[in-house]
Image 1 (tube, one colour):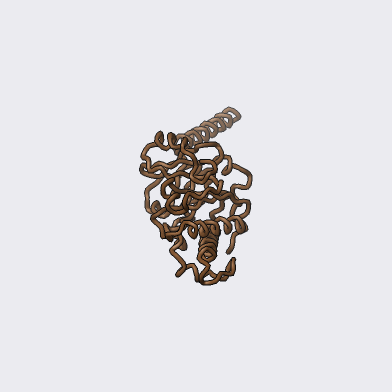
Image 2 (cartoon, one colour; image 1 turned 60 degrees about the horizontal axis):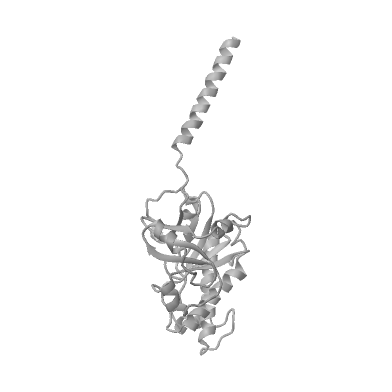
Length: 260
């Protein structure tokens, strides 16, 4: 009876070891590529085993939602940053926000732009919080595809408002800008603000994006990431700053104090 009991125990142990090894073999390896995803990826058949990345909270325009944001937060086994689209269509829209956070007159174009940018960022922060998306790193997407005025000073004021809203309404959040050098110049007049930059290279290979890391940051700050596009947007870390930021102890709490 004792021998039979020992034999049974060994059979159970061997079976458990076999199951464990089997699970390890079928588990997908974690991708080390830093990817960025948003609303265009909602219906894509993408792997869901990325380590670190960036998720867009808005749907291509400010005040528009990425409706699969909550789902995309589950695609990362490590940490993720968040980004939102920016733009400023002009005073006709800006006057809707003339009372807050600054008190603007109808003719104060920069004040109206600041308030618009502030409100747009609050919208993105609130959207992230209600979707359960939290990060200590926010990127503001600045592209000519979105609406801007012909005044670079007014456009800058809108972006200043956007930065201020994140800094005031998100706990310990760092802010950076995503753009290309030429688009940044056209929209902002080459605004040097010293914040981290995420470079849109238009490249289709990782090596080309890595080579672009030698490019001076369009913000006058540090170049953290360089983007390339294949089937999905990938990014090269131009320094360790981005991954260090995501792995810091406060990485999951960047939006806890959001405006709801």
